[in-house]
Amino acid sequence: MTQFNNILAAVGEFPQDDDVLARAAEIALMHDASLTVLNVIEFPEDLELTQSDVVRLQQEVRREARKTINAAIERAAPGINKTDVHVEIGSSAAALTKHCENFAPDLIVVRAHQRESILTKLIGSTSDRVIRGATAPVLVVKRPVKNNYQRALFATDGREGGADALNFLADLLPDAALHLMQVVTILPPLKQSLISTGIGQPAIEAHQGALIRNAKENLRTLANKLHGRVVTTRVAAGGPGTALTNATRSPKTDLIVVGPGRAGLLRRALIGSVTQKVIRDAACDVLVWRPWKGEE
Image 1 (cartoon, rainbow, N blue to C red):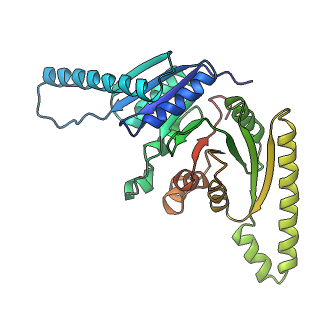
Image 2 (image 1 turned 90 degrees about the vertical axis):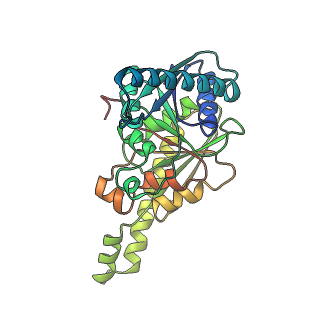
Image 3 (image 1 turned 60 degrees about the horizontal axis):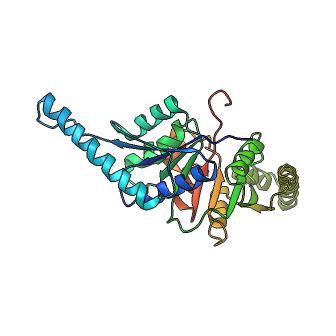
């Protein structure tokens, strides 16, 4: 069973990040874990100031940031009492990654960033870079917090490691209903080859039928591991990104869990990975699970 001792909330702006604190505090309280709040300030390097003035200015920035964070904690997470606030100067993604390496949080909570610049498409937003570099699962908060998580959608592609991710989710949200979903897809090159060689539609349907049967068996196996939990399953056909984001539009679903994805930089820049599409287009919060160091 997963032990949750430290939940890390990465914040930057308020009141925009009130919901990040609220979700992080919800999970910390659920597991009697400590809440660490990290604010990384990207300080301009081109200020024409003396070194002593820069030091004093950074001290004042840290002081004001701590004051703002403490006020936000009282506002968004009033029930939390085990908190540790860190304010650092530097690059957000790099500082957060370094902090995670030093303090090993069990979960990182961040806000979704929706910037669509060319640079963001190439290297990703701060959230994207945190997910790629993180050594712990990352919870991306996308919508206002109204209630505790009630129903989580767990997406699996049938590959090895799904059971570990599902166990993590089940331990993280012990009271939530779980819905397991697997999307089966016939790769376009294979489909085109079946058509062009004259094998035709019957072979395509037979192949899809086999994929669906295997997916149902995989979901049944995963569900049977969760004794005493409310678990439902579903197999869908089509593009994984579209099928999963459509599934998040159910009013009953307030969290979707996906893997970190394996797409390279060029592919992400051109068409985007399934995980990036889900983070961008999902109508609910997104938990990106990944194994800790030494388990990959």
